[in-house]
Image 1 (cartoon, rainbow, N blue to C red):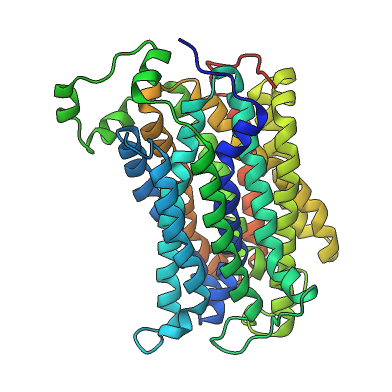
Image 2 (image 1 turned 135 degrees about the horizontal axis):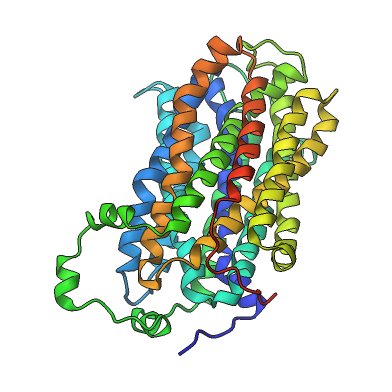
Length: 449
């Protein structure tokens, strides 16, 4: 038996929920540091609060992957996790920027960090099964296209999320003024709108996408289903055994992922203070002035630009990969992104940073698509969920390491100049590009585009 060939719009609907998930992520990535600073966090403490995000991924994704592999019921295999994750993430989105409502119980900073944790855990509950669903539903010759469409939707969602605070202020007159401990109205309303779009987009995927049953997937792979005795012996601890037995391709990709995501984390955490200091000339202690809020809104625009570039570049990835191969495509994209990050140090004003973000967008599109397209061909269908979850280790571990050392480096090694954290991110991208050439792509076939 062979899986059905899906048309473009079936693939589009299958991944449409990612638009909402990434809109939420974009709002978080562009604004969480600013919100935490408003609630009282110092620049060098930001990475410690951001450790919540990768820690939730480390804990949640392998567990969700394991259980989604073994779930099959009235609502399907992966879809129940999309919906539950979306509902919980929406709650976090609405309440995080309004954490000052709870100051009678705890300081707003700690409440905000708590809702950040809820958001991240919930995003991970929804996100991991989406990766596995592409592997489940698409034939080998459509997987690069599938992950590329997913990347495009991620890009479009992130553009909306990143630009929303700026648009609400400059197009609709919503105030971005703040005072000590009070988040601007444009951020509060942006997070509420993000929560609504997240729920709607997930529902579109849930109602339009059909999943293959475990029996069908076993037939496609010419594998037998686990016997009842094997299912009873199976346990969550099997994740550690699967980790030890991971495919060679996955081990090689782990180093590429490590340096890619180490660089991304540094950019997300320190972009606002770095640009406020290095481009706008503000002191590192300034986080409440109007100029700082303008810098934060501009970072949202810049993040939207790199996501917009990634959305369109994602459609080109299958064609480029068909011509030069997946590995060369990914290496080239990472090099462009690394040079883009390094260029931020040399740019004369905020408008020139748009050029830097074009490079970052090219790398971001490839990071979201090519490693998964390479990996999917080396994984059994019945282990797709758990291995996609385990693969997330190599996304979250570099972020955790950066979270632990990034703040002290900014304070003690960089003299509170966050721009040097961005420079290190650029170097990390270039390192990842070099490591791509060590990866064995066992399934580098001609794709149907």
